[in-house]
Amino acid sequence: MIYDGRSKFGKPLSDFVAERGAAPSRLDRDAAPAEACVNALGQDVRWVALCPDCAGAEYVWWDDPRFYCVACQNASIGGRWRPVLLPDDRQAIEAALMARPDPSTRHCLPGETVDDLLAENAAYGVTP
Image (cartoon, rainbow, N blue to C red):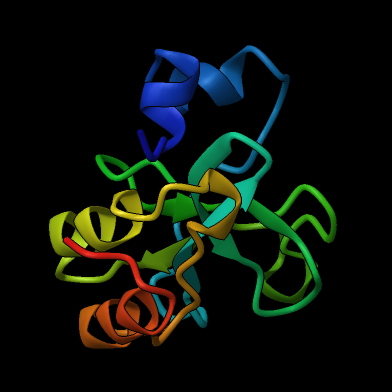
């Protein structure tokens, strides 16, 4: 399974944030978006968004695509939330990645297409 924040933590983003103390509530719609991608850390394969300002990454909530970087606290936009740029083809991306037998190879970088992932699969002998 490829987790997003809700499936990993079993709660909406608003509850997750509330349990961790004060956080910004306003979304800066004009801010550069954080781009969503798939990251594998051992057996844990997850949707994360990458901070455009630092090396931070946080879980993506597909049903609430807002981003707050714990590392830099979105300082460049006054500590407000920024939007998350989600790919249109989530199911196809996940299917291509789940075909890979080794979970540690289930990565999808921002801008990679389903065709890119399928070509990688073919190059490594992974069949759908």
